[in-house]
Image (cartoon, rainbow, N blue to C red; front, side, top):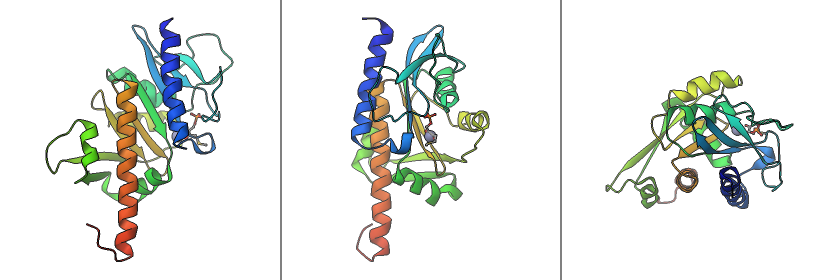
Length: 210
Ligand SMILES: CSCCC(=O)C(=O)COP(=O)(O)O
Ligand SMILES: [Zn+2]
């Protein structure tokens, strides 16, 4: 099996799992997986598709600049430049971007702080952090309509082979060394977002939560 087919199948599996979670509302979301390092190529979702559907045209191969690396009539995701920034700066192997109601709410609630901070939850161990009372923080950036501007701002927050950024009232982009790690981190962030939104509602209702 060629490396492209192997990576295609791996990304298709992640896509199906995120679809099962119903994280691809209204064609939103984009995913990618690195295929080669030198030259850098990666498979990225085609733009504007319903990512819940599985087809032979779900992904296309692009180069370091996010341009198609092969003849195709498919258009790479409108947000491919963000993926390209991550692969160009780190050893990440997979990038996942989803829009959810909870990640949009958290991005709005904490926008003025420039980040959202979470602590006191066992799920934080999913980030490989095992200290008691550990805190995790996720930066929140403005949602520039101009993608090169968004990618430039986003690049300021790419600091390692695994990481995550919230784009205000837009969605989360998570990356990891492997597809497994990226998905694990995405699920952990979404758990924390949902937990915090529910917790705030319960607090507002006068119920005894933290
Ligand atoms: C309808 S969502 C607007 C575009 C977007 O933010 C997104 O994630 C999907 O865009 P793509 O070009 O990757 O399909
Ligand atoms: Zn998006």
